[in-house]
Length: 334
Ligand SMILES: NC(=O)c1ccc[n+]([C@@H]2O[C@H](COP(=O)([O-])OP(=O)(O)OC[C@H]3O[C@@H](n4cnc5c(N)ncnc54)[C@H](OP(=O)(O)O)[C@@H]3O)[C@@H](O)[C@H]2O)c1
Image (cartoon, rainbow, N blue to C red; front, top):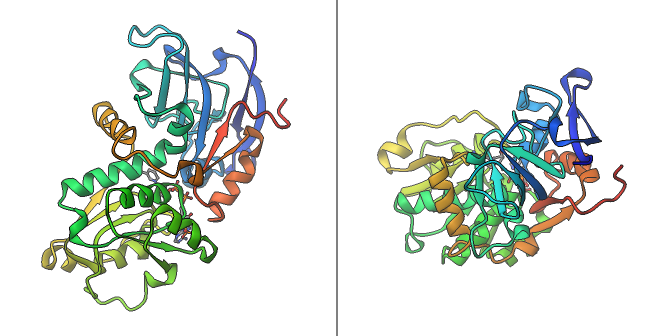
């Protein structure tokens, strides 16, 4: 096969990787028995951290980043997958310790490949990506732990972020009354369009730290962590359910046991790197009852050459919604 284009990270100065567009052949990619012609890959907060060398997410360079991708099987030695099949690849170390989505091709073990569920096209699946998967898994787990629309409001923080935007969309469609917490005053119309009923400024989540405060939320979807998550524990209703998966605001959680032992608050950890049967079940929901209604409002496409700018914007909290790389967009590529 001839050469193709990739955005690959190399060792740079002060432990910060240096990304550049290069020409590669499939033999340059991490090993696997399935070759996927990538159509789209998304840009997640974790991709931005990895590309900037923050938290040493990527330990071995050179590496092609991109923690999720969708495309068509180009060649397969796995009997479950045939050339031309539309597929999703996410997690399992892709874009971290195995070459990921920011290239025309990815080579992966067949065990990591999920056939695209009926009800989604590749572009929709890319707009959803790890972010939408995390939102859907959070909603699924919260419902399993007793959350239902009649129990009260659900609050979503980091509201204009990728996971949060899709969570608002899905929760509103399920009949939940959603409150959104954002640091972007200009994004109110966007959040309302996704289905948020009430919009609060980021400063609401902090202040005086009594162990228990007025009980406001039946559910909470937390992208932020740190003080924002501590505040959520203090303001949940009895039997309220928090889905915690993010740390954009900090990794340290300082709270007391009182919300848990006096109000029965349920703090659920969400990890998108699920075992395959769970992945299949959640993606089937994403293609049916949880399919986001506003993907074209939430998502925007960019080219590989735009990645450095996209990473910086994500780290600066200047992105609204989801960015996906369309591998067919060529811009100034070599
Ligand atoms: N556990 C898992 O498996 C898993 C899976 C997916 C994502 N995550 C994590 O979930 C988080 C969100 O991911 P994402 O891809 O949706 O990120 P994202 O698109 O960058 O969204 C994060 C949002 O959080 C808000 N924010 C940013 N900095 C903040 C700060 N210092 N304090 C408070 N709010 C801040 C911003 O929204 P506003 O401006 O609207 O406030 C921003 O848009 C990340 O920590 C990511 O690593 C974890």
